[in-house]
Structures are given as structure tokens and as C-alpha cells.
Length: 636
Ligand code: 13P
Ligand code: SF4
Image 1 (cartoon, helix red, strand yellow):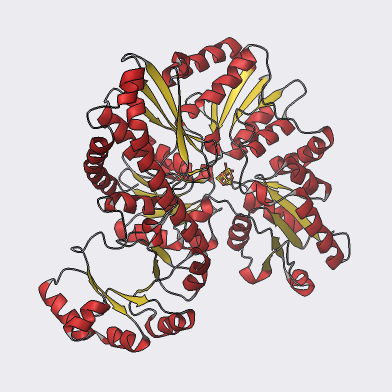
Image 2 (cartoon, helix red, strand yellow):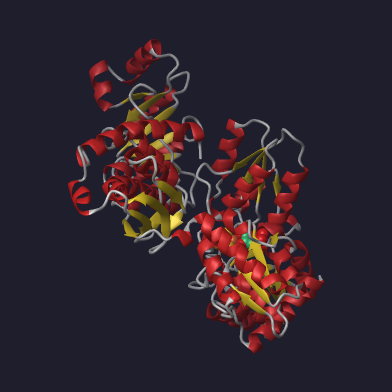
């Protein structure tokens, strides 16, 4: 997050918070003062009730602080992070009178800002296959300008001008009253030579006039044009002046507008009418055994009780407080290898479900694998179901005419044990991002074609690096399979899956960070789209990224396109290097965050008391075949 912008936003928020406290609490919260003892303490759990993108947590924290500096506010999510219904976003603890007085104000900020971030993310996602950037406008709640604009950034949008004084924007009314576009621009440039100038045009004739102005304008706004006029406008102005579409932009139309080729789309609705995100707070008497310090003590106690009987494995994308308790930290391949070699009776897997499943498949009889939150899945893995892959395989078998013997199936480790077993049964194997090149080379030595799932980006990026041209690859569409002759000619058939964290990185992010930090080196995970990998200086698996930053010289600068918790940890481990997230709103893996200190403690304490909670089991037949696939991979 841009620290300067965040500080500016919090400065603006301080004034609005003061007003909000004056209008809501005034001389005191009469109900709480009357019904609660002054020394009654409570804990509040702030929970998302619908899915969305959270924004405004630093503002909510400031509200509680302002009402009572003794209140403890702990964020369990970060601004810009996606949340699901029931997800714990933050906790507060302290005086019941203070917490209940501040609750409504804090939630009002949080719900509105999260509503803006959520709506922005919907627009950004709708336009994500184009180069268009989603912008806000000045249609903000008076006094909330910087808060609203912060929320837009957290949703993945960008900010238009902040105010009337930081950019010239010549609109139709200025043009009409000042004698035309050319005259208006001349006067504006004479009086404010340092300000960027944008001109609004209503038709193609005005656009031609605006495009002829020298030196070129900084931006041209295409006001309320239909799609065919927008396309013509792009034909006239593309590459000369950045073009912004504006007016009547709805979620239903934004993709079509973006597809005309405009560079920017400004959307008033982001801040003038966002539906609030439903977030609520429930209080309960304080539980001294559930503070962070108490949970850490409980975890350490349970761990020492269990001794060598337990090993805690932690993936690099896990929360810091979980990583601190892990015995082994690694990427998915390293953790799989460790799981295969450990003698511990209990393997507590702090990661996502498919990773724990791999450990369960490789475990020896008598070993048990547990995951602190069994619902921690993987968005990418879920894009390929067993039934859909088997159906695709059948079609491929019919087309090649030989029970698909001409195709090797390879699944990325981010997939169910069932799909790993499927690969083994059909002569294929598994890969991770660390060994994808080796595995794909092996697969193509076995048979002429490769069927790779579920991550199309890893498959495409790896195959390209091995010299396979994009024309030799085809993306499988389960709803509209590619024609038989296309499949017959293709060397690589890619499943259409993608990771919702790595897919967020866009080519613009690489351009922007290079403009802002000259000489910065960009390194990205191969789950990022090909256009991003092509622009980056380097791409590599989680461990390759970690090794690269570790061996980089002091003073070097890095922009890293992967999960944010890992990027932040790399920065704190290497303070003499600049390590930044590649995107302005760094993406978090929501499901990795589902493992918390609290559910890890429950798992460990359960074990210490002889209870196996959330054990990950794979049925014997699936485990047998999945093991063959994994061992084939580990042997390569
Ligand atoms: P690694 O194999 O790099 O650990 O990554 C797994 C993953 O889920 C990446 O998003
Ligand atoms: Fe799955 Fe992406 Fe999260 Fe990795 S980062 S676990 S691929 S959702």
C-alpha cells in the first residue's frame, strides 16, 4: 500500500471521525453509560456477512482509538483483501462502554469503504481481459474524498484527479463559455503551465480538434459515446493521447466499453452509489485465553507436550503468527518432500487442502495429517473437477482414436488427490511450479501431446520457455470444446483454470512500477498471465523467488508478483534491499489466511488430549494411484 497516500487518507479521516463522534456520541452514549459498569470489559468480533473486498480497517482502528486509546484493535484481514461470509475481519477488546459507543461509527466507515472497494473490484474484474484502467470521479460524499478514493484503490481501481486544483479538466460548459476547445486549452496552459490538461469531447469533430492541439493534451475524455463511436474515436486517437470513456458506465456495459480499446474508464457509481458491504460486530465477555499472547503460550505448551510426535509444516503464504510456530517452512514441493520423510506421528499442515492431501497420500501407516481449517481450499484447484476433466479426456480419446495414448496428462500439484490418481492411471504425473519444466519435458518424451491442468498460465508459461509456440497450444473449454482438427494439431492442451491471486497481476503494473522505481527488477510467479511473465525480468517458483531475493546484493530493488504475505516477509528479512509488491493493491490468498493462530491452537491442543480433529484422509484406492503419480514426480 502506498504509505504516503495512506497517511494522507488517515489525516483526512481524523477530521471526519471527529465530526462523526460529535454527532453520534456527543456528551456520551446514554444507553451504555446507564446499563454497563464502567469497568466491564468485552471483546468484539468484527465479521463480514457477505462476500466482498474489505477496505477501511485503518479508519475503523482510528475510530476506536479516538473514542478510547486503551481499546486494542487487531486486524485479521488487510485492506484490499477478499472476504467471505462469516470471515473474521478484526477483533477489538477493552471497555464495554467505549467499544459499544464506537461500534456504529467504525462500522459505518468500514461498511461504506468496503462497499466501494467491492464494487470497484467487480468493475475491474469485468474489464480484466482488456487494457482499460477503472477510475473513480469526484462524485464522493463531501468530506470523504480521500477515504472514498482509498477504497477505490483497494478495489483495484485507480484515482482520477483528487480535486479541482490538481488537474485542468475542460468540460463542455467551459468549452461553450470560453469560445471553443483550442482557446480554453490555451488559457488554461498560460495560467497553470504545470498542471496536466484533460479535455472532454462530445463527438468525433471535437475529438479531431483536441487531437490536433500541440503539445498533445494529457488526456481526452470521450463523453457518453455509444460503442461504435468509441471504437471510431480509438481508431483516431489511439497511441496519440490517452483516451478516457465516461458516462453511463454500468457493470453490464463495462466489458464492452473496455473492449473498444479505450485506455481509461471513469465510473461515478463507484463512489456515488456503492451498496454497503454487510459487516457486523458481536461482543462477548473477554476471554483471557484467546488473546494473541495467550494463544501463542497455549500453542507452545501443546507443542512441547507432543514433542517429536508432531511436526508443523507451514507454506510461505501463511500468516506470520502461524509461520512463527512452524517447524518447517517451505513451498509445496519442499513440504511434500518433508512430509514424505518425517517420522512424526502427527503432521499438522498449515496450508491449503490439496497440500495436506499430498502429505496424507505420502504418509506412512500410523501417521496422521491434520489441517487447522478443513475448508481452506484453493481457487485454482477448484476450477478442475474430476468429472469435467474425465469428460475432456473422453473427448480427446475419441479424437485421437487410441484411448488417448497419444496424450500425457499432467496435473499441477494444486489439484485434488483424485486428479493426481487420474494422471497416474493414464501414464501421467504431477508437477509443481519448481519442477514444471522438467515434468513437461518428460511428459512430451512419453507421448506427442500434453494435457495440462488446472493452471493454464503455468502450463503456457512453462511450455513457452521450452520453445513451444503459443500456436501449438489450445485452451480447453468444457462448455464449447475446441474443434477436432484444432485438437489434433495442438501439442499442448491447457485447462482454462487460473489462480485468482496471481491472475491479478497485469502488464500495466510492470510498466507503472518501472516508471516509479527506475532500475527495479521485476520477478513473478509463473501462475501470472503470460503477458506479465513476458514483461518481467525473471519468473520463478516460490522458492526460486525467495532464493533470488536472498542472493541479491544490498541496495537492489525488486518488485515481486506473488502472494503478498511472502513479499512482505521477504522485505522484512532483507531490510537492505527494496522488496515491493508488484501491484498497487497487493493480492492475498484468502484461503491460505483461513489457517489462524486460534484454529492451529485448537488442533494442537486436541492432539495433546488425544483427539484427531480435522484429519485429512484420502481413500485407499485414490491414495494408491495419487502416490504413484507423486512418486513419479519426486523421482524426476
Ligand atoms: P508453490 O508450489 O510455489 O509453493 O505454490 C503453490 C501455490 O499455491 C502457488 O500459488
Ligand atoms: Fe491456490 Fe492461488 Fe492460493 Fe496458491 S495462491 S493456494 S494457487 S488460490
